[in-house]
Length: 503
Image 1 (tube, rainbow, N blue to C red):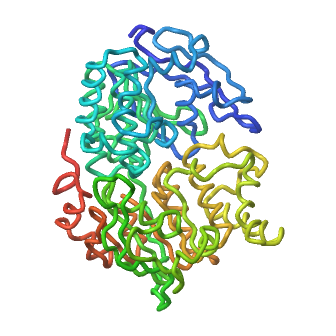
Image 2 (image 1 turned 60 degrees about the vertical axis):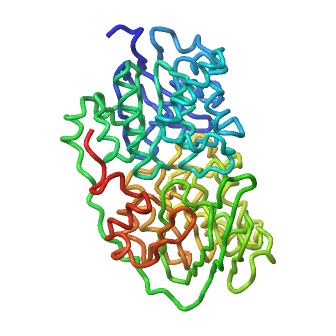
Image 3 (image 1 turned 90 degrees about the horizontal axis):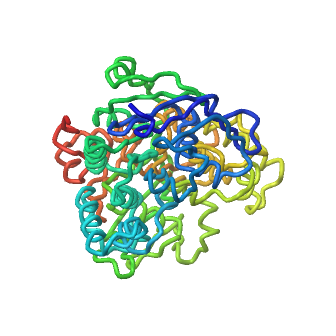
């Protein structure tokens, strides 16, 4: 295949600012048009950095690092292309959709790219409607983007890029926030786009689902180098799902009620329906709760209400018996820690040390207490090897996710709410981190995991709460809730009766 049909990296190396070791180390790969390429590797292996080099975020947005080697994009020297020129050739869907949503309304977001291509109005409308139909988000076109769930935002971001019809599509963890049916729809689209001649590059940790798209080309990275490159049959033959040991982390729930939702309803201004309707929920000490539901079911909205970021339009929330409306967000944060779905919404400091010390310092902890809390939090999330002096912005998405969790753990909250805690993490890293968290000596009394990972919920949770269309439709043990296929289908957590169909 000619270079004009490929994206080629030759001896590509990159070292982030304030880092001594390269994240990419003399890496050489060729990504071909008309193929779906799957790139895998553990968190921190260099996958996202490779994506940043291809789409131009390195060097245009990440400054001060050292980039070496050669990169060509469909026969053109990448160093001669501006960020905007690369965007015309390569459509990118970032791990964090918040970073690429520019419009306040979904229709305008999908129209933004085609408008910048100078297309006539009718052609723009056609592309918007086509992309919305492909991602099954036509019902969202009139919604304001700030009212969408993380999974809905992810589908909007994918549709917005697809509407531009680029020569290549670069997808960084596109399934991370999607429920099973939405993930299946997205995989069908990626496969179809590759069949139409577009080069589709998918970086993904959810390997079971990703392999169902039947990629022609698979690449595995480790420490910035290629450890495997071949076809899907060769990759599948060497891939073995990790055997994850059972964790002795289940505890007997206590009697103390820490957090209580009483007839809570919520509607965003101008939204066509309520996001939550008459939710009654009691969280007790000692519980590990898996909060499950399809994209848009109301999970993240419920979490934001739990810490006072949103106020119910009806009903009330009590924290240790006190009406949350009587507390400031800062007062609530002393007892309830919330880790957002997207770590970029939390990370702000110039160094990891400043990031981790900010919360406990505001709580009045001594410097010795802060240091101990930081050491323990980094150990819990598996980041003890990082320098506190380095920037958090050069970390991979998975590492940033773990850092965000650590920054909340340093404040020792009684309740810890984790919104999609495994997003951006490979299965082994996610299991190790959560296992360490739930068995640590100074663990939170109550943990709530918002997740689409039914295996994770079955293994770690003491209780499962199932949301559908803003209502609690089931609340019970993992064995009962997750063993009811009809109930999971009603909650739109199964693509078909027995899981994903075969492509």
